[in-house]
Length: 272
Image 1 (cartoon, rainbow, N blue to C red):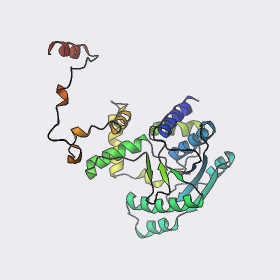
Image 2 (cartoon, rainbow, N blue to C red):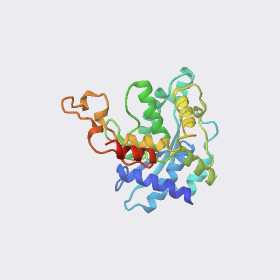
Image 3 (cartoon, rainbow, N blue to C red):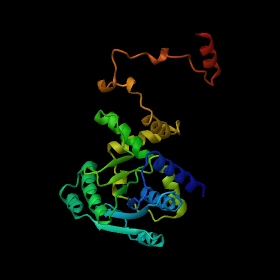
Image 4 (tube, rainbow, N blue to C red):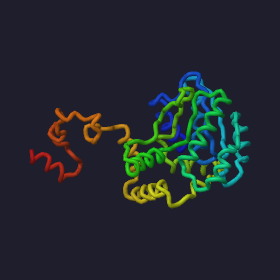
């Protein structure tokens, strides 16, 4: 299946480049029942069989009261793949829905993270894998730049505060159009979350911006991901990274490049 090969290649690249999974790791996959977590779990199960290192995979689901359908249909799918699965209802999150129905994503995330660490300890896992995709990385980058005044996105690898868990995001090079197609092609019983239907949020606005721009620039997310890995600190405004006494104009550093467009090629060869 070409689609699966494309996804596995991208996941394998992320895992290898950022050293996400190592010998002897026990990886607990956050499994929400959506297309992204389904794709992540499927990819890691295949990699487990093919990778040159030995690691194990298990899965967990935290019910915060936002699933739009019962998640039980996935139980059979997980059993067929011999995946150890832990399912827990997070009662503090259910109380949050009742007491603060208009709570933001940041509050919900803190509740979920606490529950994630508790389950990971029960599973004796040292690695926790999340299903954030390339779309999430790009959206976080723009959201932080435009609304919080910071240049940052999601980290591919990070650690819990006490360093007892390594947190990884192996889908960072996989866009949601691929996870959507993969889930549809394999007939996965995808279970949506109510949060995905919210409108009037910053995240929804950024998604709409992306959707409009990608009509003309289909490789926009790939370009943004490349930019996150190609930071020119000398062309930003953070004084921690600027050498104000020795900065040079990069435009004077070398000859003009030869471009494909004939007009620009002619200009670059005659204006020097």
